[in-house]
Image (cartoon, rainbow, N blue to C red):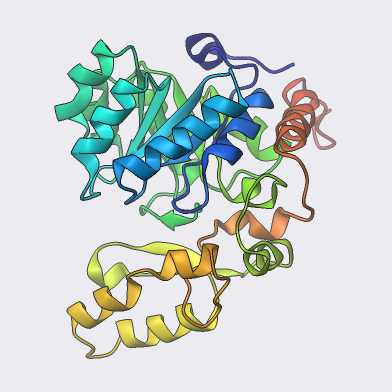
Length: 314
């Protein structure tokens, strides 16, 4: 069994996190991942505190294992959400899209482990200084909002820049990716797109089918012009948006086009108007299976590789 320091810190069985995917990662999915030995994470996204509280309560009703909440720091409800996770004594908070420094004292006072997502060495150093428990180094292969650096390049630089445990994210779908991340110096992995295929993931069937039938060139990045690049499946909406992005269409029009599109994908399965977030590994996801099975499968694949059982090494 693969274990690492992050397992001891968080009280989990396997060093596998489930990404906090907005509109996707609810209390049911988070509980399933935690019951499977990993760290399930509920996505706060732009969710009001009262709705997030419902999802936290759902997770608590389904598991007695540790789980986390991902806080999107640009949410209009971030202050309320930060207070809520403290009230609910959530075990772990992961953060994205900003600097969580103003909330760190309250998180620590509530006994919460704080693990920010970082996409640069500078951000990793800052998060180390403000008291993070660990870091998630997320490369541009991931789905959703992406940075410039790939996971292969980013992870070792983050590892060298901090003495905190580092979780690798972006482009990881199986034991080979898991083993590679550990060899780069990470102590665990976070997977998002892989868990879109979990039985417990309640995305629209159209979305799940698109993931299961994806090819190697299935994703594209839009939003660079606005300074918020996003990786999603190469749907008609994504293509149309990309054309307008490189036209004289005003920024405010592009901004408005993106409003509500993730919900249209996750809830409605709307291929014409929805943004189907996905990492580049979608082509490596071939079947629907329980979350616990995904975790075990990835770890079991990684173990012999880490023991030197590669077919290329003598």
